[in-house]
View 1 (cartoon, rainbow, N blue to C red):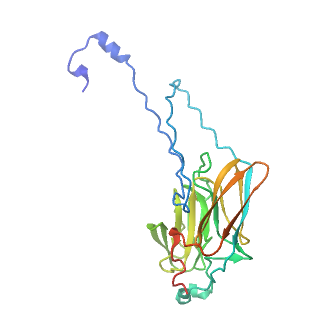
View 2: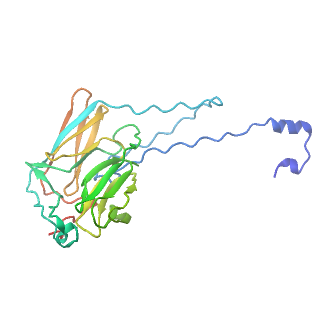
View 3: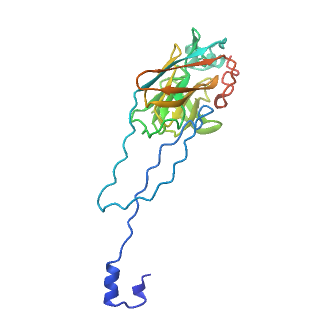
Amino acid sequence: MHARDLVPLSALALAALTLGVGCTEEPSRPTGAAATTGAAPAASAEKPGAASQAPQAPQVTGQAAPASPPTPEGKGTIKGVVKFTGKPVEMKVPTARKDAPFCQDKEVAYNAVIVNDGKLKDTFVRIAVGGVQGSWKAPDTHAVVDQKDCMYEPRIQGVVADQQVDIKNSDRTLHNVHTYKGSETLFNQAQPRGGDPLTKTWKDGIIKLTCDIHPWMRGFVVVTDHPFFTVSGDDGSFTIEKIPAGKYKLEAWHPRYGLKTAEVSVADDKPAQVTFTYAGTEPEPAENKDELKGLW
């Protein structure tokens, strides 16, 4: 209730109130990109806490605040290879596949461990979460996970935080997409043959995709707060480009053999070279226990 409803005011007082100063509403501040594979492979670097900001000078009414500068694109490159020195697990056709309608039509060997000439495929390699200064918006391009021949394809890939991921079913059978972050179920949704893609986003973590109908099916989407990541190819090689010069912690994560790390210095004029080596005796990572148990 206003004071003027209780006590008559003089004309002079009314004029003073009319000229009184109002409060302008401060615009909301955008939230920064979330850190990822917080549930990253084991030892992700944490972002340092932001320093408290000094009070800002008032701005002239009607003048827009200057836009923050875009994150500069770097010129550095990291090249490397993932080696495997032990005896790899023999990949066979999962026993349950032979009894599953539609899936039994093709004898597809499992793909958890693929080694060619001592080089390990499907190892996810990235600069550690929070390790690159700057802010990166999720790309408009959607990442794609396909269910094809009763397998997830690709087996492992990376996305930027909040990037949209389309999960497709190219098989002529029903699948259900059951995803986990650690031991927590994120969603469990049936996807019939010919159904629309399931479009999802995640802010961080190693997302594991499974199928309760076909229990051998497994795939991984690793979410990072920047775009500096890749996956080792058939020959174990990998390349990460357009990195700002500096010193970084590099992570390699394999769903069967877990996390390796390396320190690397990146310059603009010469690619940094990195080698990761797995012996095949490493324990299974917490994010993917017992994948091969009971498959054959």
